[in-house]
Length: 255
Image 1 (cartoon, rainbow, N blue to C red):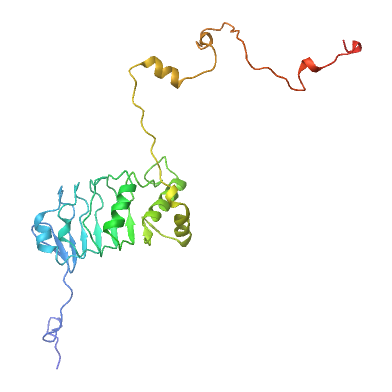
Image 2 (spheres, one colour; image 1 turned 135 degrees about the horizontal axis):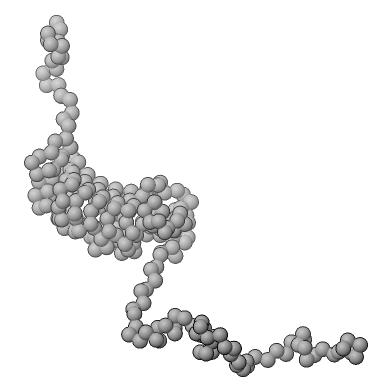
């Protein structure tokens, strides 16, 4: 017998699984799909307490993109996380994660991270399984598409330094880690850190600063560009070389 109705719909056998349900957002803005939890574009400055209480035990993938997060306090409720998406937030150098032993993917694109060293040391300690990391759009990542004054050489040195710190990475930013990069990072990665020059504090003595910044060996009388007088001085250097004019003998016929 046919199970089709006159309208053309097919009746499923009793007990058969239906089509997969599309993820739905509840009134709080949370979208749950299996073990994937998303709380995107809610302008939250911190992780809501209800998020960890209701979904921390089941979430393996958490997406908190396009918020205003400056802190990750409350993330300790998501101890089983494998993927964490934090793109387009306000996270800076004070970023701290709880210990997440199963985390293999971390996306931190377009935040406010300017220092690499402490961040990478922290990740090596709390995310021992990390294999995929992206920091594009941060000042700490000198990508030439984002930082106009950087080039491919700057970005490659950054990659070597990151791989030196996190040697288990398989993918960094938008590029797979090559075997050559891995070998170079092991050899020279520790020396690829970019050190910012210390900013000099303005001195109250403007004259002393000016004289230090514009040093010239010429006497003081010749430093004024509007003063065109000749300057005479003594030189302590005496030339004793074989080409000295004093060592030449001139014959009468050369006069």
